[in-house]
Length: 335
Image (cartoon, rainbow, N blue to C red; front, side, top):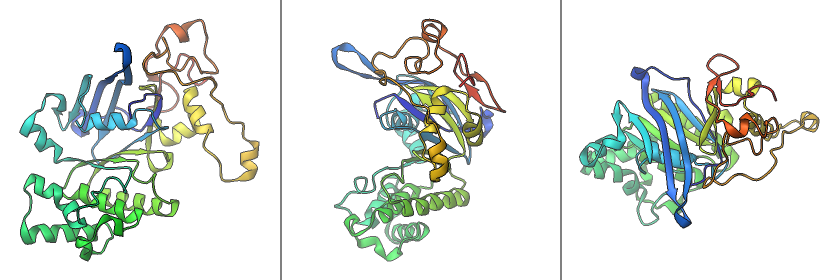
């Protein structure tokens, strides 16, 4: 996504280097626009992902979360900043060195209907990464594919079938099997359940959690459901504005944008829902080509001092609230 309006990402507080598998340091991504302008899709994001944890990236469509995911996996180059994977700066790797790292980083795509080649059998789809890296041939290749199908809950005899013969949930399981084929340590799950029925979503999430435990995987999990991730940071127009544990985000959110996002989540109890007063965000989303000065949220913020510090000074991410919670707001916690 080339936008940069609003996203939520999740993370643990800054982790020691020896426990981090991915470290994002002040990453910026600009895209050229008409008239010589640039779209500021990602504007100075820093994140730290520990081994074995799930970092959730949550936000509305067009917010830049998929752009950040592609920067982290080196599918797109950063404009500036660094992405460190297992101690290696990906922006400095080329050719074979980058290819070796790619084996440890895989993606499960959002749309299980578009991400599988309809002209290839399931067996060839799952085995394609094995072929690319020369990891298995002949009988060993067939055995590995059948093992992966069984691992994701599919019949191992389905290798000669085509994607159109499967349901959405089954296709996503095939995508998961393909991602696991080269035994990666880090997987980007790019909204892997958003195109599925609610009943199937839970099955896929449970499968991913089971696989994480079994293979000690680290996930970057892009989603719209805050319940599937454990630690959260919130982005607005490409900037991180709050970082916290999921419980603290819900109960003690400090940034007004975070509070607005949470208030938009419906409560499945009609009595409670009727008594709630959602916090509405007024105005239009600013253009990432020409973001506001000072705090990027000040043009829509209910507590902004304009003119004043909010429109003139960009707030830093500083400790507020509980434990390792941080917020980038001059008046954090006042809403």
